[in-house]
Length: 89
Image 1 (tube, one colour):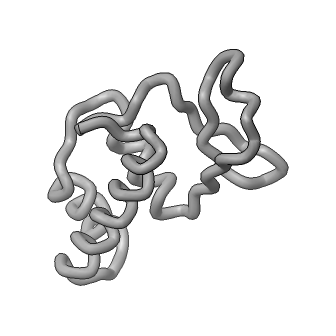
Image 2 (cartoon, rainbow, N blue to C red):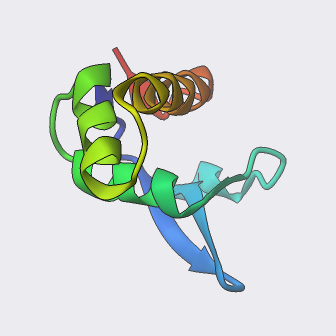
Image 3 (cartoon, rainbow, N blue to C red):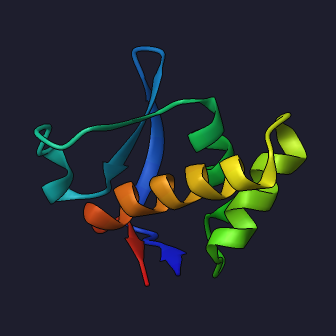
């Protein structure tokens, strides 16, 4: 899977948010704000193919979290972004 390159993270009023670049990016009804772990995943996985295991490893490498919890969190992050078309499989 891969993060759609049309989407970018921007700092808006101190919050990191995913926006769609271009004319159609003005639809503010679908705003996704990133917490620090979601931003870490975004920064490390943008521009390359990845699997759930790659995201989980980033989490275990950077946080004191079990592999099981990291895998569950990575799946949730991927599911949310896939739902909005930000991650394509």
